Image (cartoon, rainbow, N blue to C red; front, top):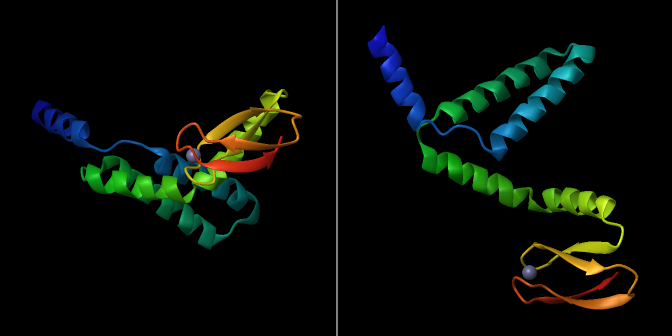
Length: 133
Ligand SMILES: [Zn+2]
């Protein structure tokens, strides 16, 4: 028994664990679960189980390089959505500044509000773009 636990611990140390893609899958499955609670759709139930199995597979996988590659693709595909959410959140908390995503590198830049149309130089990639503050 002690040997099995030792082997299990040894395997779990090599596992990938969780990342943003797994968090997204878990959130999606919870949302689908809530929707399915009211609609009682068997197809949605199947998708929830599939998503949860995929999440468990990704968490316990020892092929870390592939899991990181999948997560990197997920992060690059959702960058605009995540930036929109981040800008909206920052804009809501900071009423004195306006936030813009650089069209070149997608990093968020902060400028003072109420200055009219201004030229913004990205501090990271030095790209210049015009926005109304
Ligand atoms: Zn930039």
